[in-house]
Length: 346
Ligand code: SF4
Image (cartoon, rainbow, N blue to C red; front, side, top):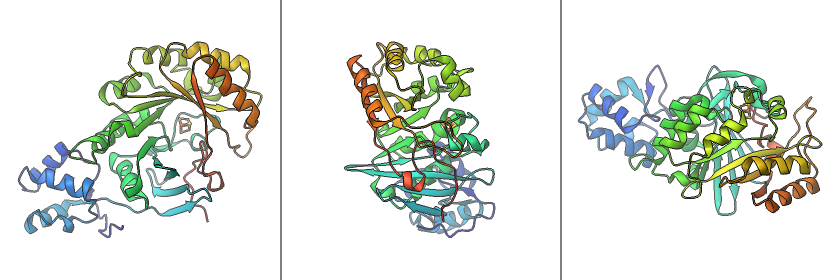
């Protein structure tokens, strides 16, 4: 689908909440109920042009078109993996591109979306982190990823695990979640959405209290000094404080808490780490996703052997913590965890 309307300074309608659409209706001299009609065209019928909104008056559409456009932007490139994973490249903020990754898996079809162009968290193992920060994605750019990938109609799940730290762009991420889950929006169940975070404390609390989405925390080491060497944000947001905060909430019903743990050879893959992780998470209703690492150029980090990962998983399971090894997807198109760089592949 293409939005052939030239941008020409007109503002996008996608990414606006019902309340904001009411303000647009008032501004353009449309009746208040036109906001609900616009929301239906944008999020349910997936219109790409204001001209398609045929239950708005012709005059109303013309007035709307003077200042607004739908705002759908097709991906500028797509790379397909042999395993069915597709990596899409979109215009991002600050002149940098961002990526969304479509991951089909039996009866599930997940889209991994980006929330920022680049990232300022600086995780040592992450290609996005190496780029630095280039700008926040507005809700329109987040929702556009969901609506404009070729496989949009098939999507069953959404994960905020692409480029950027979602809690570092909380207002726009919250707006996108509202549009995704509201009855006037895309009416997704929040149980189909997972937001990943390094654990920015105040923002994480807001996310948990104001939404019902699943939460995933990047942990990667149970030891503070070691985590800090991998993730400098440990200094500002120590994992023990993140876990303390999580203990305030109920993750046994309706929503899920998971911890993401990349397993590196000789670094965090032994029984000592598994036991320390078990102690740290004791009593929390959670699961641990063990992730294979994909070496970056010049990186001294390497993925742990298969047997080591299995032993690590089994040890956590013995300690009463559900742990699974996440299947690696899209390696051949550099779409796997930590590999998103916002670059078109020829
Ligand atoms: S792993 Fe996530 S939080 Fe860390 S630098 Fe990469 S995108 Fe940012």
